[in-house]
Image (cartoon, rainbow, N blue to C red; front, side, top):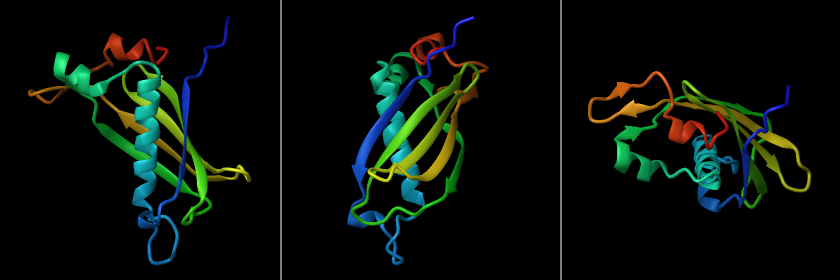
Length: 139
């Protein structure tokens, strides 16, 4: 039995001033923004255009669940990498996230996000991710 290759994507960014709060650390909601940038970079890296797919099929892929574990806060001008890794894409798309400082490579934040397929305009949740999305994600 061969081990399945894990699909991941990493994006590098520097914390901008407008992402920090009065305590001079990144405001907690901005971590979801970093996750989204990595999520869409991952989709793009395997040839998935969710907007184009929606225009062709009327399938949406809303986020249904997110979790975030804050370990070490990011601060203004910190350079970091946000890594998105596909965990599953059969019934729902599950992506793990990890943010780590460059240089020290310390893990600052871990997260997870779930997305489902929804047929629009009916807003009917599908029981599986369409094959055109599953296959490029390795499922």
